[in-house]
Length: 85
Image 1 (cartoon, rainbow, N blue to C red):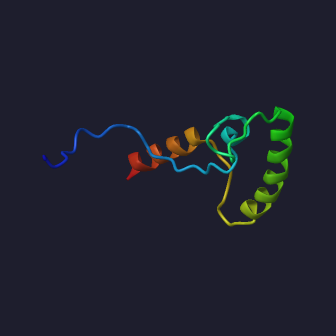
Image 2 (cartoon, rainbow, N blue to C red; image 1 turned 90 degrees about the horizontal axis):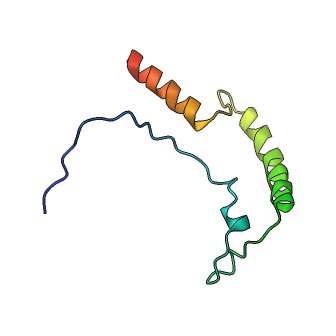
């Protein structure tokens, strides 16, 4: 077995994300798992998200330096910081 060799660097920042507010479990159907029943109407998913978001936004905004942003904006900021370093 050959050891891994590093290739050429590429412009691909890794941005960690939280999957708390994703819709897979609401819409996907997995007949082997009772937890993935799926079939929720979009209005129910929106209702769940709105209640969860209200509980999440206040603690985040109360944290010094915390903010909401898109993954693209975070990646662009990282690239700019790396270019200055």
